[in-house]
Image 1 (cartoon, helix red, strand yellow):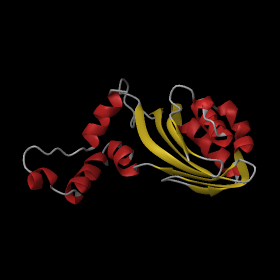
Image 2: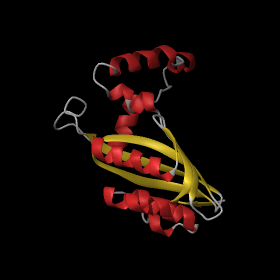
Image 3: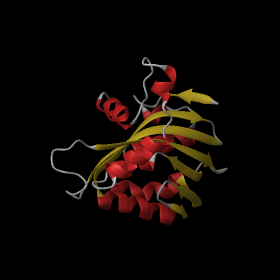
Length: 184
């Protein structure tokens, strides 16, 4: 397997199917959705924490929905690792909710950190696309009225690491994720 950091130039990955996928996501716009059949096989499977669909037409509907519901959605592909058969990509997905209830004026853009596993068909197009990201911490916890419940559940389920290891231990949590996102 080859490792390649695509942050500076997503179009330069040495494996063509990975390069095509990174290119698509780095510059994805509603106008680019007509290019999905070039990158995804006709009967491709796509899943993320909210959806599980089959077929490039259904995948296009998901992306159209994203552009309709979100303001300025964009992906930054951070890393890609793989070969002509399969790959893993890590990314940041930044956006703003169109709803003022979910995204008050002046609030920072939302950022979801995630990873994607893809398996390529024999022709180099994506056959399986699976997105992995923490919907509880990176989505539901940010919803007004629901966030407090998600944080309480997380605290109730979390191990008490600082107490077990002494005062020098530190737990990384949602607050730390927000701080890391601000430094990028």
